[in-house]
Structure formats: structure tokens, C-alpha cells
Image (cartoon, rainbow, N blue to C red):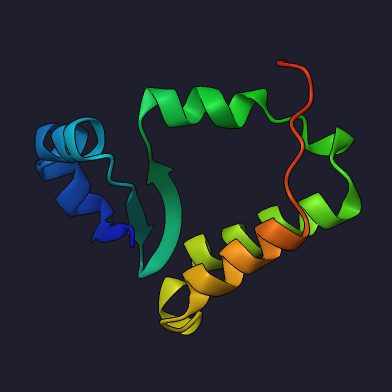
Length: 101
């Protein structure tokens, strides 16, 4: 589950945030006024995301990515079994990657 912190906390502890992301593979969601604004992810994860050509994905693939996006934006409301449901969605509708951008 991603760690969530305020923009002030992220600014004050950015070195620690970077270490957690790089060394532990964590994702850090930064909030402003209690609302998620950005995600801090590793460069490797960012590059993998850039390789996705979402416009070329089949509608069912887009649905799986939308599911993941909903979880990232509201992890507490998705429930404890979200990962199992997401994995089931991926098994039923695997994501097909397009050519790199």
C-alpha cells in the first residue's frame, strides 16, 4: 500500500522519501489539503509507465488500468481484498503493451 504524506512532510523529508522509493520500492502519495495530488515513484517505474501506449490498449486493458488508478487515488475505500480483485481482472484481461513512446 502506498505511503501517504502531506506536501509539507514530503518537503521536509524529501531525502527520506527518495530513499524509501528507491531502496524499498515504495510509492509515496503526496497530499495537499488532504487530497492526493502526486505520486513519487522510482525512475524505473516511471519509465515503465511511459512505455505504455494507453491509447492503443484494448478497452478491457484500459479498464484494468482504471481499476489501479482508482485504488491509487482512494486506497482506503477499495477494501482489503482489492489486490486479489485486481489480479483477477488482470488474469481475465491481461494488459498488452504497445511500442515505447
